[in-house]
Image 1 (cartoon, one colour):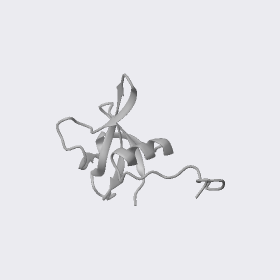
Image 2 (cartoon, rainbow, N blue to C red):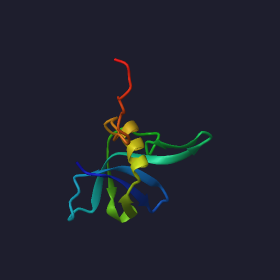
Image 3 (cartoon, rainbow, N blue to C red):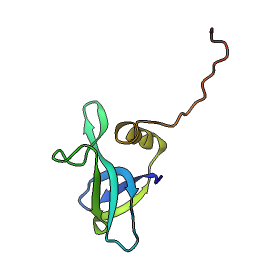
Image 4 (cartoon, one colour):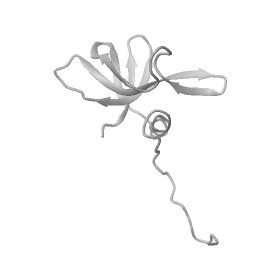
Length: 102
């Protein structure tokens, strides 16, 4: 499974998503379920890249429109997975069952 990455685009948009089906000879990259960061009164949230398209899907972006791409922090990957991915997040602490009544 490919990793979740951050994509900075030439138009200033920042996306988080999973790059799939990338071919070095192609001029585009396919990103599964991209999300953009949007500031709100409650803080920063992730939303689909456009209000006019399906919330989840596969998007093809021309490589010439990508300024750079990099790995994301684990916290961002967990948030993306929860809202746009499988819904599963990696556990960060072990569950201490000692001392619990059965």
